[in-house]
Image 1 (tube, rainbow, N blue to C red):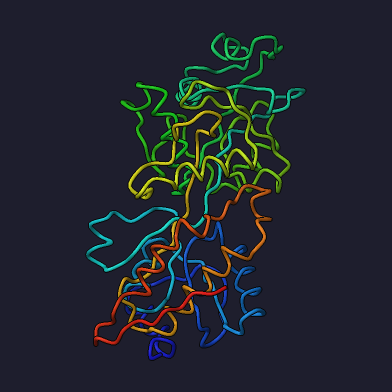
Image 2: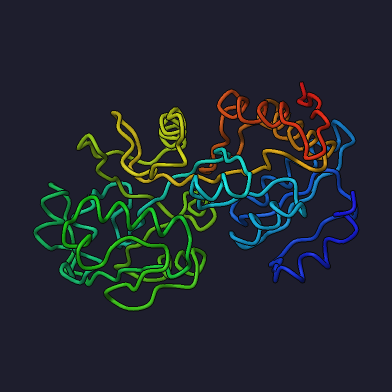
Length: 351
């Protein structure tokens, strides 16, 4: 429990930076990480505390900071958008498992045309973001959208320079569909966009999309309802043009996490009929050999309880929790470990 009292000093020495959020003193389960899922995890924590009496806290934190502070024992659980490479996990003695999935949507603002009526693929989107397609009635867009009266309206590509998993996986989709994009632009969460700097984050991008006739951009599915945006159809790995729905994203997430080590592959163009082509996954991390046995077991209990008992209301706007049976083997492996002083980690879990 020493870490509870010296957290601030350790974080200062590490150069740790907490961005937002607050936490009660001496919470039993302490987590830090991605702001994307903060509201959900805080809500889960409140419900879990009411059910069990075990207190929880969640602090928004930078990716590397949350992983590092998990390693040194400041937090019990790190939640990250970018999975850590296997060699680094082994070096730090960490386990990693999927927690949430969400779809990445393409949004178009063409007056008189709902986004849902429009179709795109990676090749045409790449040409738009490279400045090769500049108007909505370009023959390549028309070819994907037969029967739709597209206006001669300038296209305004809206990018993001936010270092997010949403941006990374959107560029992966473009690279998969366009050799020119792969060779000239590449893949990245903070790359240099051919047409200039992107918006600072998805919220700023959503506001620009909403306010700009002719705009096109990409968004995490959670922002669609918040900003009253619609998603275009996208072409998936099977060549199908599919609409974005919460059920389709959940189906895609289930297909993705069925892999033995999903964190080792990119969640874009997951093979299978009817699947959404751009997925993003948020991961949890815990120590293989936790120094603080009670808190580690209460963290396992929290995750097990939440994934079994919390209603899947977040799935309705795009955030899909992982099924408990997918992560149970990993959590049980934590329960079976021994600490550095040889004491057995007792079984935790929850109903």
